[in-house]
Length: 400
Image 1: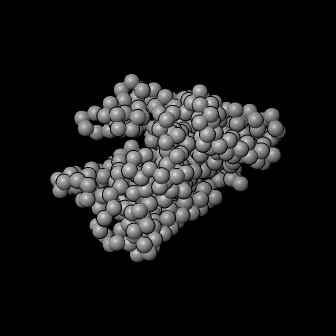
Image 2: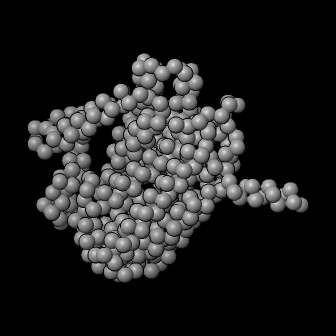
Image 3: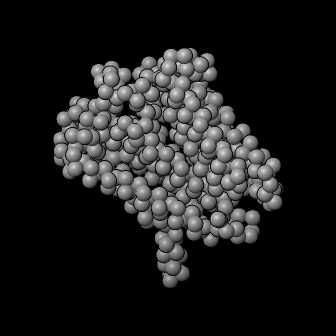
């Protein structure tokens, strides 16, 4: 009896309640914000349906976390290639079986649609990609214990090679925003992979120079013609124009951003009060949900939200440095970059600091696909804490 009680306490001590608290609070903020958005934009029946639908997705996400937690590092190692190639298959399939309705509304072939339910495979591809990159890094570093410039470039090449199929498929789907998330994950995992800063620093400079050059080319008409030849499309130019000049066309291309900025600005310090929305913002239940929080709960409420994200990231970093399993450490880095980039981009685009990309706010925005993808990421982090006593390849390896 005492043994059983001791085992239960040991299992409970291996559950990170700090992470659970942060996700739960974000979920509650999400439900409240979705309720506000739906109340002002939909019928009473639709409000109930949207809130209940999101609750169901949260329950599914919790189940996903519990299931993923049961996988230790050895099992995750084995499942990584299968998860990656299954994700690639789904990304390829959606190019043929995409939702026509969503394509008309968004111009992206990114969603399956069945019996009124929609699903975006790129969201669950993110944790699969993180697992695969983690495995690639560990395998490479085990085979090349002596770090050289050649081995570092070889590792970068391998990581890019596993990224190219995803980037190509997302380009065919017209989903540039999601592609940026994968690039952020790639960048974060390259930084912690052990590659020398003599390679990383010049590469970062080149990336920023390239991005700056592309932005400079967007402004003149001649530059846009050059970018069109390498695949850029009109809607992407429109988003950059809206970002650079948000007040230039507030009734058409810039309407969504302008309304979001007005809503957030009208919230002031303390907000207009719960369910007191006076500024309409398109799709504020999902991509633009930060505008609901800024309007209803003001600057204080927005700061509380951002603090919860920082607390969540801190908890995940803490768990990462407590493990001596390098595979887990790389997985954790990928998940942290995924969530961090989502928050940075969503908040940034809502207040006009970054271009609109359609990236949801983790655990808060309405929608099932992104929530499940993020909850799988949380499950991977929780697995690291839950199986903290099991190490790969026999010998413990400190992460630094």
